[in-house]
Image 1 (cartoon, rainbow, N blue to C red):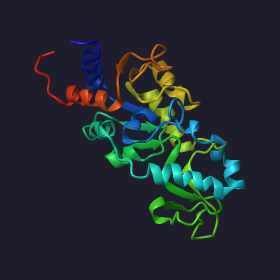
Image 2: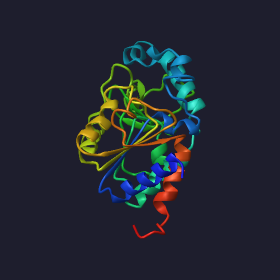
Image 3: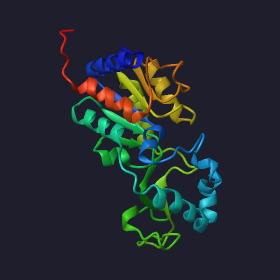
Amino acid sequence: MTLNEKNIHKAAEFLRKSKFTTAYTGAGISVESGIPPFRGEGGLWTKYDPNLLDIDHFIQDPLRAWEIIKEIYYSHFGSAKPNKAHLVLAEMEQRGLLGRTITQNIDNLHQEAGCKNVFDFHGNSKRLVCLSCHTYYAVTDVNLDHLPPACRQCGGLLKPDYVFFGESIPQIPLSAAYEAAKISDVFLIIGTTGEVMPANQFPLIAKENGATIIEVNPHESNYTSAVTDIFLQGKATEMMELLAEALFTPSLDND
C-alpha cells in the first residue's frame, strides 16, 4: 500500500468519526473545471492587470472594467461545470459527513454540484448587485451585451457580487468561517495554498482548536508542514474520488 493509499484510509476514518467537518476550498478545486487560478503559472494575473478589479477603478471606469469582467468570468468561464471533487463534497454533505463548505472561489460550482451549506468567502459571480439601491440580480437575468449593465430599479451601476480589491469580506461568510474553524473536528483543505489574507488564517485557527487537518493539494503548500496532519498529494478530482471510495464503501474488517 502506497503512502497516499494509507493516508486516504486514515483520512476516511477521521471523517467517519468527525462530529463536524468543514471543507475549505480554493482555486485548485476548480482548475479541473476549466477555471484557472488568479496567481501562479498560468494564473489570470499573468494575463490581466489586477488593478482592473480594484473597486475604485471599477467605479471610475466601469465600462473598461466590465469589458474585462465579461471576458474573464462570463464569456470564458460561464459554462464551467462542477467536477468530481465538487460532487464528492456534495455527496458527503448529503450523507451527513460534511457540515459546512467555506470556499474562496466565486464560481458557484459547489452549489451547482448540490452543496447546500456553502459560504462564499469572496462572494459569487452568479449574482450582480446595484451599487446605488443594493438590489440583487441573477446574472442570467441581466443583458451583458450592453455594458456597463444598469439596475432596472434605479438605473444605478451593477457590479458582480464578489469582493474586489479594496472591499471588505462580507460579514456572514467571515463569521461562518471563524465559527467553523472553532467547532470542526476535521478541517478539509482542498486546492488552496494559504497565500491570501485573511482567508489563510482559518486552517491555523482550526488547528489551534484541536481539529485534524486533512489537505488535498498537488504540491506542498504553506499549510503542509505547519498544520496539516494528513496530506493527500494529487489533483483534487483524483484524491477526492479515492477518498469517496474509502469513505462510502463499507469496511470489510472489524476494526
